[in-house]
Structures are given as C-alpha cells and as structure tokens.
Length: 77
Image (cartoon, rainbow, N blue to C red; front, side, top):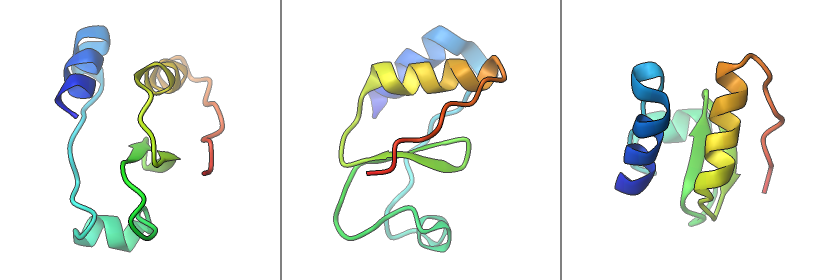
C-alpha cells in the first residue's frame, strides 16, 4: 500500500489521495466494497476497480483516465 501511495503521489502530486480503509470499517461495509475475504479491494473514484489483486500499472492508467476526463470501465472480478 505504501508503494502504491508513493507511486501515485510521485506521478500525480496532490491531485490524488490514497488511503487504507479497513474491510471492517463502516465505510467499506456501507459501500459494499468487500465481499468475503477477497483482498485487496482497490477503489478508484468511489467505485470498485479490482478485487483480489493489485496492479500499479492498471491503477495508474485508471487515474490518468479520470484526470483526463476519460473514465475507463472498472474491471469487475
């Protein structure tokens, strides 16, 4: 998680924020982000982007698309 945070901060500066949310948190439960024990869950712009894996390259591409106004469809897994 620290690597993801540093990489995104280096590429995008203060335009993005990265934080760790506990799967047991009210926010995660309320938004339905966590299903079973499948972690990590990557949320981009309030939507589940991917579950069960973490690809820095895919997250960077999604953030770039959001910042450019071209939103790619999240990969539902």
